[in-house]
Length: 174
Image (tube, rainbow, N blue to C red; front, side):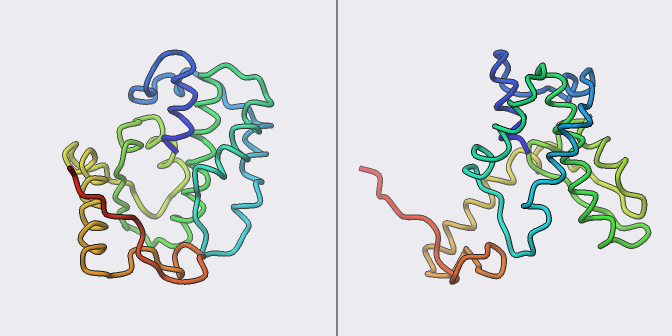
């Protein structure tokens, strides 16, 4: 999500859309929204994984073909993300469930609001900034520990790869 949104804010000299204010000012382009939601990825059976290459080959060209201003791109993409997340969370939730939102997207207040609009049974919980900002560092520490113990960190049941494997390499500092 942030890879796409930050790609577009950087085009106007901003690192990210602080609090989602640009997206909030934008207008959702219904045609682009429909085409994003119809991408074959969302209909494919799992396991599957989103990668940067897929975004660069499928998402960016589609968005760019509309020639929208940045605020409208951000508004449309935020709505798309909210719809897709809601399509997974809602049918897998029961009344009163809570879903933890972490990573940089949790700081995008507009995105979190739009996500909330697409679920009824559960609610999204945004934790403290320490959890949000350091989740990725903690995950990479875990991946490093798994590597050092020769434990699989990439599971075929999750990624769709042909086999489980140990991701990454170890390089000694000199």
